[in-house]
Each structure stands twice: as C-alpha cells, then as structure tokens.
Length: 239
Image (tube, rainbow, N blue to C red):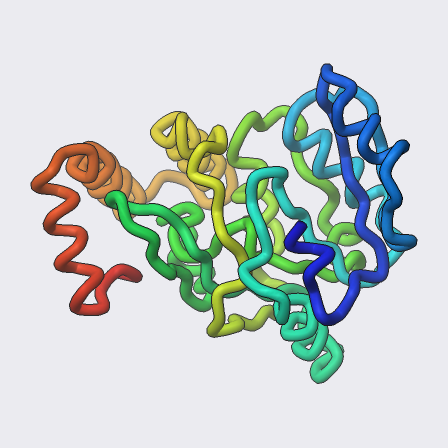
C-alpha cells in the first residue's frame, strides 16, 4: 500500500470500510497490521458520511482523506507535507499536484488555490492532494452528507479564507474509475449549484461550465485526444 511505503510513517491510518462484502474486514482482522492502523467496518450513508467518520475518529493534528482507489504518489509524500506544516504553524491546509489520466495519457495537474477562481469548481485544487488541520474542521464543520459527489468542493468553499500553501510536487495518483469521473457532468452540475449557494449567479461560471462540457465530449474522440496530447507536449496541461 502507498501508505506503508512512506519514509515517514503516519501517526495513524484509519480505514473506513463501508463494504457489504466481508473481504476487507477479514484481511484487517486476520493479517498482521502496522501498529498505526485502525479501522471502522460498518455501512455508511455515502462518501460524505465515510469522510466524516474518518475525521471524527482521527486524533492527529493533520487530516488527509485518501479514497480507496487513489494512492500517494511516492514514498516521500508524508514527509513533504509534514515539513510544510511544521515550518509554518499558521498554515491551515495545503494542496499539490495530481497525477491523473486525461485524454488517454497520464499528466500532472494542479495549481495554487485562488478564491476568485472558485467558479471553476475543483479545476486546479484536487481532493486527493488536500491536507487539512483538524482545527479547520472544528471551525467550519464536516462534509455535507446531503451532497452525493461534490462534498469536497462544498468544503473548499467554506475554508476558502483559511491560510493555505501549494506544494509544487505530485502528491497523489488519481483513480480514473471513481464516481466523480464516471459521472463527471453530474458532479460538475452539483459543484456549480454549490457555488451559487455561497456566491450567487455568475456569468463567468456559466461560460466556464460550457467550456468544460465541450472539452469533456471533445476528449472522448480521437481528434480531441490528439489535440490534448499536443497541449501536454507544449506544457499547457494546466490551462
């Protein structure tokens, strides 16, 4: 596992298992586990509920939520993140680059967070790269269990004024088979409804949603993939 390969071992690693099958629980209970590993095996009410169980059970100062299919990029990640928070106690959360599949190729994407660009949704800040101090959850609350897919974006909108920093290094590899990928347009619509809840209607948001919808369909055909490959080769995959 990508957690076990870290040079800096985690203070704790809590597995939230909401599966209807017994496989994960059997593995946890029968195989030797590192002393930092804990687990909660019970049905949940969706992704947000599972996230919240992780946060509630966490006893450390920095919380990271790793989805089951995603992985830490390499063995240096926890040390890199720890250094950032240790060197500046005023930083409340951080994010970094993400290794993800787009247009049939693996690319590194991600930028520093800009509150004024929240109308773009989770376009440059990706949940698998976000690390948050526990006190931020205490101030702003947990994830909204009424949101099916964009609960991370809702949380990002709420913590937008907290001090943050960007780590210019890939922190995670994204699983392209997850629900936000297979139901991309639904997740996008949910994000934009959340934006309007906090910031009202926006012409920029509407235009951006049209752009993303067009790109979504474009990347599904050979021409779109070819154009994206050219874009990556000239270093514009973050645009």
